[in-house]
Image 1 (cartoon, helix red, strand yellow):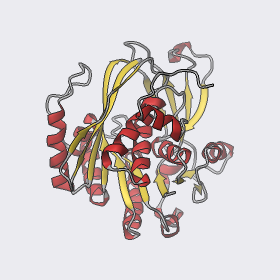
Image 2 (cartoon, helix red, strand yellow):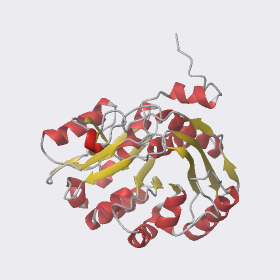
Image 3 (cartoon, helix red, strand yellow):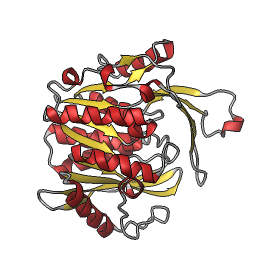
Image 4 (cartoon, helix red, strand yellow):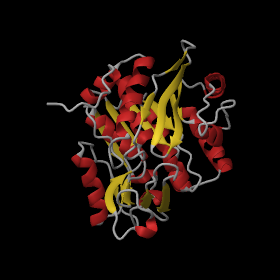
Length: 343
């Protein structure tokens, strides 16, 4: 069992019931989630020692967010308390050709004002095997970007493997600022995860003629930019999820990876996910599954296949968290995607 630490913002999610638009909703469904928190839940669910680090307000809503993590067996001992509020995001789930829509209400959230002094990183990373963060946290505020770098320095001082999910959020910052901040943080990263938009907006690499809306994935373009990214940042692995959006309810889902040491490029099996129940958290479940594969000791191809299968299954589950079991993922990797009733 590996110790994996993730750090970021956990938020209150308010989503419209079913596929209602905001203007139709008389009530919202409530759950909690956030990129790094979702990864921690996946890893805890697969049996690893997962810990989530953040700052939440010292009030009942903050306690509810922490309780949601504890319920999933995520360790919360080093979560700081304080600040003004918990961030909120509103979700309107799309269907067919109507896209989903997210509205953020996270200004002045507790994590946005957190400082390194709020955390004992020497203690947090003691005995840790892996640290994961995303591009969302540095985008929240300049203070959060500084906090992220301090955490990365502490992790590397302890010899901890580091992964990032680039996760560009245009509603939080510009591509220009993302590239300035994130390019600096890449010096600490061993495993880089992202999709085609992330690679372009966050690091300035565009994978050839790929057009996910038309379903045209030019894999040679991905291999080319992966090699460039390895050359520039010395990543051990570069990984991209590949989502082909036939509609909001119907996606093709696969991934590819490039190994610095073996110089191999590998494309996973593709799953047709239809109908999609909830795609929010799909990328986080992919990151969590792939990290699980690595810390399990799988080779990079098998780790990728585990991550892709895990995230394909997540699309069938409402809420941010991926609640499938390790056995569920292994069955799908093994070829059982029948969906037959288990008796």
